[in-house]
Image (cartoon, rainbow, N blue to C red; front, side, top):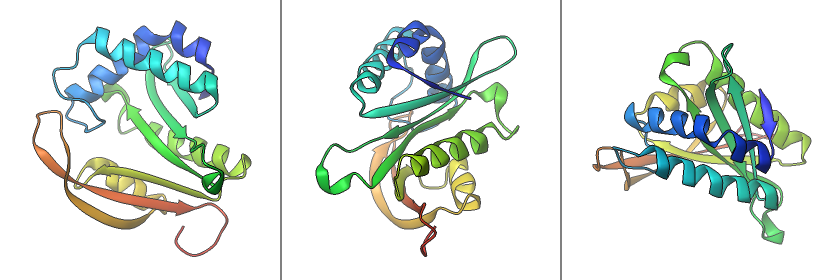
Length: 175
């Protein structure tokens, strides 16, 4: 697991796009509708590279033995002075071929540890209600903050509820 800078993300945009298209094709609700084209996914990753270079986003990637991107996770850092204690966990993705092997847990742990090392005391995220990701977050000590009905469309375009989670990194109750 490595933290990638903007240049590395641009250089590996093809592999990152393959991961994103696989994630969407498998039905995960990560902000895109199916079918997601490779060119659109590459353009999205190039925009993320700019955000990383500007310091508003951190991205970690996992590679398999063949150097293929098999997973990513990001931390989105708010820029407002009153919110520098927190970050949003974004785009935790694991390629279908790498699921069930603990990679999602390792990515999540990596992001949590990095956030704590950066002085963040609160993380939050949203995920589709009823998705397999919820099992991961709950087992990792994340707390449900609430559910919003019809919050986002899944890759098939159907409106689905979204559950909001948070995790305190400072040892206080609720995480």
